[in-house]
Amino acid sequence: MSPSDDAGASDPGLADPIGRLAFMNRTGDVDVVILGAGINGAGLFRDLCAQGVSCLIVDKGDFGSGTSAAPSRLIHGGLKYLETGEFGLVAQSTLERNLLLKNAPHYVSPLPTIIPIFSWSKGIWAALRTLLGSTSAPRSRGAVLIKIGLTIYDFYGSQHRVMPRHRLVGRRRALSDIPALTKSIVATGIYYDAKISHPERLVLELITDGLAANALAAAANYTTLVSSSNGVLTFQSKGGGQSKGVGQSKAGGQSENGAVFSVRPKLVVNAAGPWIDDVNASLGAPSKMIGGTKGSHILLKHDELVRSLAGRMLYFEADDGRICLVYDYLGLALVGSTDIQADNPDTVCCEPQEIDYLLESVRALMPGMTFGRDQIVYAYSGIRPLPASDASVPGLISRDHSAPLIEPEGSRPFPIISLVGGKWTTFRGFAEEVADTVLDRLGRGRKVTTRSMPIGGGKGFPTEPAARAAWLADARSASGADERRLDQLLSRYGTKALPIARHQSSGDNEDRLPGASDYGTSEIDYIVRNEFVEHLADIVMRRTTLAIGGSLTMSDLKQIAAIAGRARNWDPQRMSDELDAAVAQLSDRNLMRL
Image (cartoon, rainbow, N blue to C red; front, side, top):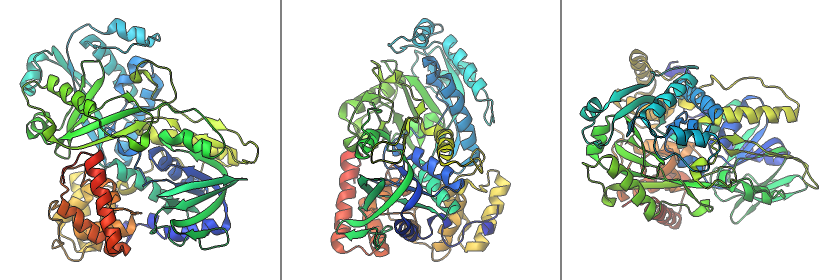
């Protein structure tokens, strides 16, 4: 696909979001409302839009800002779920991993993974006990057990295989390869999974793909459900930008806090993740479906460790038997994750004891290196929306998904489908299952499959060097941008890079942000104007990797605020408020030093 075949000045998936919501507000009726725009909600939205279903997706925060913004940034088959007997989940996960490598190659790429092995035969009986229902988690996995697991993993990953099979490496060779690794190992296992560079952007692209496919679809972030009465859902937008003017009709109105609009859905999907029970209660259908656990990650500025990893992930056991990981993400060492009981997703953050746990885990793995809190440049946490469980160990709670149905009752004429559990990797398969249920309830059939449907900038993405060179040459002719700059944008946005390149003023002379020279001011301006931005934090935390990549400075933040302010007509007080809110978020909850 050449750039001339791609999007023009702006993304068609973003065309007139205000007009779409206003039209939906005037007509009132809509087939499906999805409450929650994380990865599962966004995946379902795209699928239903592709089937011609009129659909509204809303989120009380930004798109992809909850649990979906806090993964280990892996697209993986779930090797560890073999020992809990979730073979079906592993089979689906490996398939979906392989499909994402093909459908989203701009964000998803192979990740060679090394498992340090500390014994030859330990863990076999413990694994058997777990398979038979033991409530204690395995604490040690020897070479025999890992060999069996990797063989099964390869078997499940054979469908649409795109990566090599596993192999075992002896101690001497393993230590020669990574000298800093603990000398306690007896061998290592090497296999392949995948990583995702921009999970938050992939969520956005699923939504914009859905909008591009269906003129009867609409999306709104920073929008809360304020009432559910006699089949009518009324929403209020907290923002004043993309949804401003929506409520200018007899069905809605304008309040001091934003637009108010109402719709009458035939079916509601609750995709609110850890907030599912709260949302069901607000719909008049109290439930107890969620029993989430918290996962936290830290990113370290540790050049020695990153060099030692050489593009690979270490997937290892902590002292308590929990599986941890460390790999190079944007030049930083990403270390994760914890797994502890938690019940308040609104205040979740990485706590001191979690930092100690993660640092001690990687310290034991690489005893020749120094690790300390001063190396942390970013931290993040999220609540896994797992099913309610009485498991004594969080790691034994199923990671599989389900979609319980609450039938219409009393004055509520619509059914509610709740999206419970699931892995980031399996969002497409989960969405497909739920979409088929929705279509059946609506008396419709599936028109297209999403199995081979590219996502966003993955459409026509040039994966081979010759194809990439040809795309860049065509894009340079189409945009006038410098080829080096185009290559940078292609890596960041896939084939959606072209409208961004066209948006910049002249060649490679675009002004750069002072502390992050690979982001341009017109690039930020395009994002603000075209990507549902309501707040400064949306830009630095989800539309870009400026925050998590550790390159954001206070001068950058001020300049980005100025760009956003001009594009969105923020007054000085709003500019000041946005800066204060972003700094508070980044310093208090993400441990950034600005």
